[in-house]
Image (tube, rainbow, N blue to C red; front, side, top):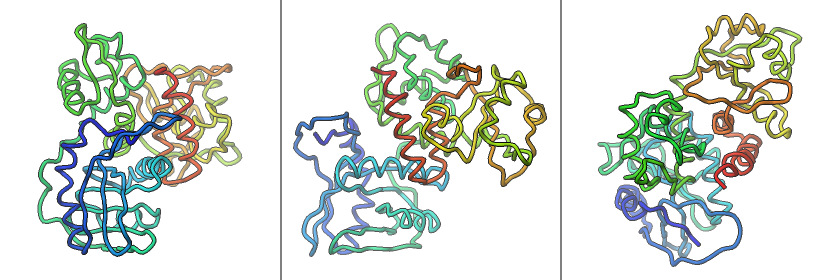
Length: 358
């Protein structure tokens, strides 16, 4: 079935500025609710809204991915989401309040159809081609919901790991590494979005894990990662990226350094030749980590150091090296709009992230 997000009706009302952009281009545009139908196979992703376009080309129906902002850091995650919708429904389109010129250019390069409220658009189908760039917004669009702050994104991480069923708010705060006072407000916001249900005893049931995962991807890349980022390094000449895992063990750092990014994905899936690594450091001086691992500061390097947060034990490998949680590993892969990495990110989603909710 074309599975509708619980907030579809509310979201549809916020899409009127983008519909006006399309109408200003001479197209008939409206949102609609499709008739439910069953489809065998894997769970379908929630669709924010449905768009019907009519013109000389006929009538086209598009599932809408609605983002309140699109920044360069999150385009990889956005591409993953759009490609998944295209596989599921045949086509997809992005609605957003504003796509800055550089973002609009990148979206077109990646063949991501989009419309914003400022008048910018890229549409391409048989008999239809629209490319408008450079229009600027006059004012903030009405009705847009405020994005989750860093504490809320950290709480999303904990809930998606599947521990909310048996956790008090105090335990959730400890696992997320946030203040206890921020948990209640974040949970209420997630309930208002229709993503979770807080049960009588305080346990949390996930109602829309796919929507939560999409928001985690965006929130990590746009909000949380910049706060956790420490520096970028390079390896000493003659050392291989794959050797970092053994180097961490030999340096006695396996309890405080977790491996993420492409190297972490390679360790989890055994199906990727990594070109970058992300090391999540728990309570250590990054200079000490660099010294013990033989890393040198270099903005053009291939090893990113990030501060770990919360109580995140990671996955043990037989030799003692530890990968970061698959949610973190996957999100790091989405820093680049790379089809090779997006394929591995999808494998991590199905094999590790969704599997632990079954």
